[in-house]
Length: 73
Image (cartoon, rainbow, N blue to C red; front, side, top):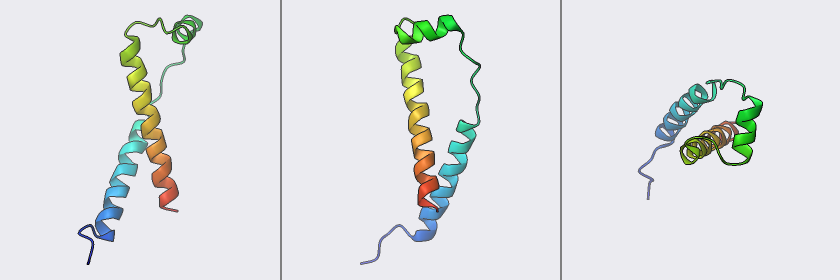
């Protein structure tokens, strides 16, 4: 039985995903001030849950980028 997903389709998807993730990874954050670092450590930043969720997405995107990079070696 042949798989419905061809190797070519898989490679195109991986290439597009890698390109999208590299664009996300290229965004630079401004350096945090001491006050922001303290608020982050104590979980007292404004909109803490939203910022934590955004950081989790950023970490997941970085992990996916590394996985794609390792898979294409």
